[in-house]
Length: 396
Image (cartoon, rainbow, N blue to C red; front, side):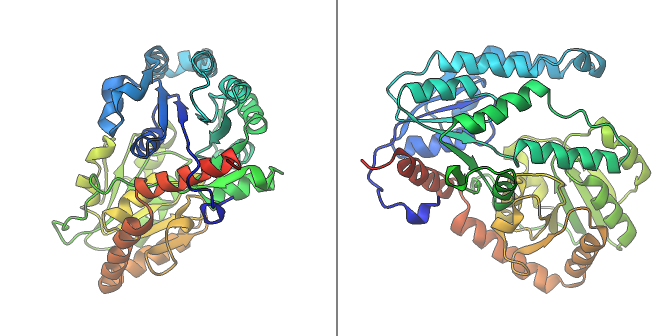
């Protein structure tokens, strides 16, 4: 189903959103609120943080205890976290608390995967149309490709707790629709036999106010990467490509949280041309994107790299892997390039091309910003989502 075949644009929507954490739910809530279609946003985030995203506090129901529990657990030493993983228990408890707060004031329920099984059932009992947000590829596909990648790198892959996987697969069955952000994610569901009629695609957006295009302050050719410095993000392939090119007057800027699993990689490729900063709040990232010449995200598995559309809005051409959602954002050779996963030679070729062709790079930068403005703001995302929800409600 896609917004292009939806003709009942007047069908009223009154939505409840449930999310453990934040993700892109707050942008969705703001868009629905602006359209007069938001009943409630139930989140583990505190109200004072949620209102920063433009959601009126009258719509917000904070279940803060679950966020506090999640953050406390993440701060524990790794051996303790391995000894007892409370994540699945916390998500199940959040889901239970959401379910008991649902009522018949809403016609649509939107829940985030992994924490919505009970609330999906309750919403259906109340007569709501149900939509499950899955930001990554199909859970089974995701775990398989990441296990393969960790094995290739000689590392142990812990994966998800079995209870989380079991619950998420049950959510796929229970919900009316699964919403994914890219063709890559869509194909992963189809490959697992998921019915097409239950699968919806809606690429994410960017807040142009927080990602302005600004003048680059120097002449250094700078490749920017933003995300966790992890195996999943394909960091090893970018480090190899950049190091082997050894381009004069160049720098690789890594923005994000360091991970124990990739510390040996960073040590192996240590160079005064490879610099790590961050992580930073989303609203502060533009200060670092403005330093870039090109943005690179070679992820092994990413349902949709939101950093890609942020970089486009900042006027950066993209080099991204097939498994990032980048193919939904750009046309090859116009706003950037899409390359196969694990392909160091392809990364080197595209980085070198943009290094050697500053005029083409400037044209791609203009095209990237224009593309973000034309199709990939959060307003665009919200309008597409609202059309999907109306269609999911069926004939009026």
